[in-house]
Image (cartoon, rainbow, N blue to C red; front, side):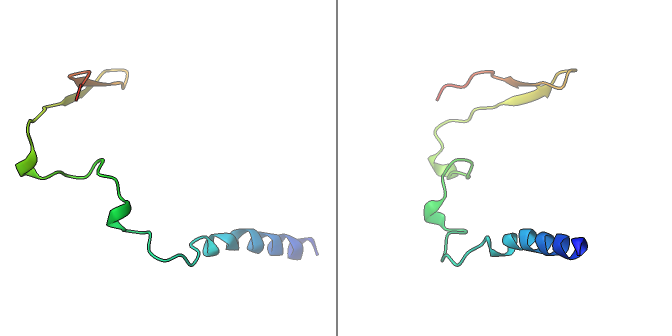
Length: 71
């Protein structure tokens, strides 16, 4: 009897992920809802180029040159 109850509880708990998507329309891949952060810009509109280099110290910390960037 314990095994049947445990199996029933396990199935009830794990089946929730199947319903997590819901029935909403759109949302995924909607270009209007995306933020421009991290997306490539247009090369013709670029006004300047900033070269940033990254290196790693012996302790695993990352070093960026320049360390500070003001936009």
